[in-house]
Length: 127
Image: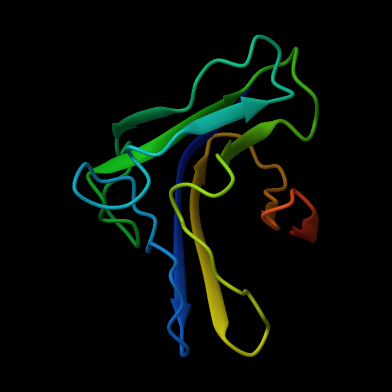
């Protein structure tokens, strides 16, 4: 069984858009109360908000998102926020953004990040 125990995404930009961030999963921050959906993960258990299992180092958050990739799930199993809700609308370009993801895992494996347009098209996956 693979574990993806924490994920925090920080979106920083030199141009102001209407995105809500950084995504920190704290009760008073962004992400903890969003509508998250898991996909391609066997019975698709929901994304959990839990206490940070490793609060030292670079991630000092008290709350993190926990996704458990099941053996019965696909290699690309994951979770997503509902399109048009939560993060808001923004234009992600190489010239105006920086993406940081903090991930704590008990098993080494790739982590991907994908953004989608309002129509559901993908902007491609970042590994």
